[in-house]
Length: 134
Length: 84
Image (cartoon, rainbow over all chains, first blue to last red; front, side, top):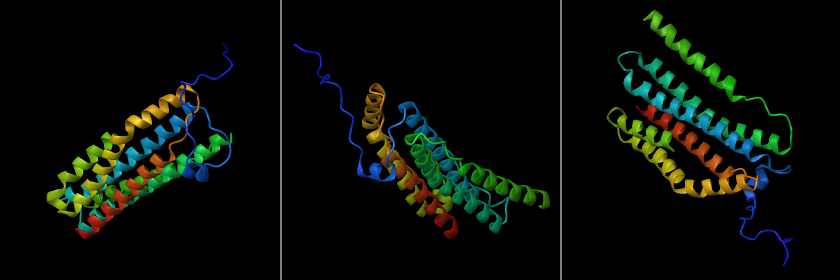
């Protein structure tokens, strides 16, 4: 009788896949709460991206009586591009944060924040100018 | 997942305005939502076991696929707007 052996009914940790080995090399797994928090932040950015995509199509579909066609299409494309960039940028940010946490390095600055702020301000400015001059 | 379902329903709402190309957007967002729905039980189980042993592997495949779906939706959306 011995208790020195590890409990066999506990699930063993899954081996890391090839993609994870390649994109997240080195370091050690961070605290699970931080990994899951990073994933939640990524999903929040994805929701923002989806809202922008839906908004871009909505502007094109429903503002025909409000905006001239070039303004309407321009705004729609700005919003759709922003949604695309946010989606890709969210994945890049998730990867950079995960790498930093694995290597116990300082977290990187969120580059998608100024992107979202700048493009949002640009879209708002275009709408404001158009409404004032209309 | 619910955000993708909502967005896919909103895309359908624009079918009269944009025609059948919008069905592509609906198909991509619905497929992404379905994939999340079908795999969420396994991912939940993996995460909860990981929390129990204080070691959660980052789900890089899910992150990359979700981001890819967003990029594809954006590209298709730009195509739809330019074609309108």
